[in-house]
Image (cartoon, rainbow, N blue to C red; front, top):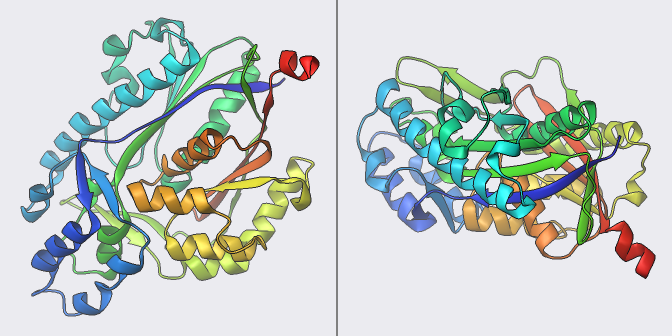
Length: 359
């Protein structure tokens, strides 16, 4: 059963933080208490980020915060991002909230029970019999894995309208109390954002047609300490191992080969890999692992530069940039996240059947 993308949107929170401003604030917070900060602070200049966005203003980070106020900020910011991204995707698809049969919500940076789609049920106009599928814990792989989940649900429910919403508020996990290198890296890279997609088995009648294939994942054993969260009474604490670029160099190609085989494709048939830009070094490592020309992942670098690493939604920002640039052909979405897991989704971009016939 073919599955199609009908609308793809992105959303950013209101507070724009220049990288230079973040570095200055981090120096005030970390400079006198973290002995290695001066050496590590150089990564602010080499991370490939000019600006990113946050659900809270920069002054928020200079005050101590525990679980209660961190999650209160998450609830306010994440709900607003959910609505902005979801409504934009629905508008693009020409759908109403009341038409949505299933909503898949991906988020790993805050806790909401009931989950976010229930929190905004009335505001979005969702029906009271909507199928809710909240997913937690996918981290940076959440955009690709969430799209794969939504694709599978749509394929199993022909004609159903499936809405995917991916929301992350990474900035709220900022920690100045642990004095760990991972917290400096998080301050350098991470940001907030959201993306949404409308998916169904009904083929678009005109314009660009994006058909989604079946997703594929690979999880490596004994890699739980590469990426994830530590959880304590203060909040989430990032686990972000320095081995990630090296791990990509040594392991990613084999994982990609497995995804290609599962999709009955080979490397030469992929016109564009659409990747999650975890950081400048990770993008370089992916290009090397896949034997791509250095610099070819230009949309990935542009998203990283303009919005930072937003975790799960970032790959969907890249996907939208690639589609907006008019790229067509066979593509493969890919991302790495906690597990340690590689997630892949093949998709094809081309004209509608009526336009092919006219040509």
